[in-house]
Image (cartoon, rainbow, N blue to C red):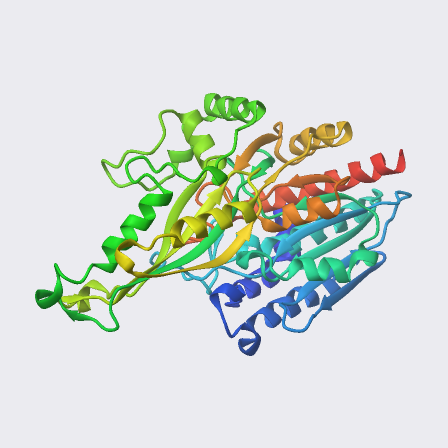
Length: 467
């Protein structure tokens, strides 16, 4: 099995170099092509991949016009299985978000004990290293594996708008895909392999409410010209109950399967109130939900609204006594895993755009809509393999839980390869701070996940050969 010393020897330098690249996803870097950071990241990972000790493999960077690059590493089978396994990750990053803690920086990786701090290391830069070191470990031990294609995309943090085009381009090359492992998911703890059972979908919209062609002295016009912020509040009340946080649009609500309710209850019984355990709530702030079980379901199956950005509002330091001409907000809706995002998006846009309050100019723009995902029932071989992989790599049985985030590619791949077995797992555990400040990769967990992937690939090859 791979050890931490092996990982440090073979991967750490390249991983740290990747951590220094500000390869922001296109949604956060409109001039990504000119800046070249995504290209620098994909070339760094490709160069590292070409140095791997594998019997028969190919490293290719694919580039479609106007789209972010994709790294595809094809490792030919060493056994008799005929199917292809896909290992997925991404190399694009979220922006820094804000000021990081003293001694930490988003693009200057820092090691504290066995933890690395930098943007994108856990989400999801480690995935390339984990995928190929898992295969190296198998070949070094003489353990057969199937044909494997490692796909590392560069637009996941923008909703994977480029992935489908590459999947279509590579359709024949991918062949008969029978097994997929996503290395971009989370973990409740670092003591076992966590398998994601569901992911929420997402709809993002931008809403702008205009009332004036230019700002006016508030002493002269307030009470006559309506406040754009007040009218925006009215629009938000159409979609969310401000007292409870409940979503009011029927198209965004779905029934939670009994099995997922039971799984949430079991998780709460074993781990307690896990959704708030590491939540940095201020003193006196009460979490939503009536119980630990309900809070797990609220974070994995409930539709929610977050206002993630605002425009037309000056910083407090420069705020003048002006009735502003407009207020804009970016609204991010998380959807239940089984909700159709296109239907939800249409309902959101029509609800916000209809009957503008007090005749205001209301503009609603759809930014993104992506379906959630619910894992199919486990095939017997995979059920056994996950248990064994977790015992081998972590010394404990695997855990199963839903995730509140979105990985749009899973729904896309599930529709393309409906017969394939799926596993979504990853290293995003407590204090990993994905998308926030002080993002952290726990190195022993990365090593353990790598060893678990090795076991899963060996089990798939054996099961596929026996078909």
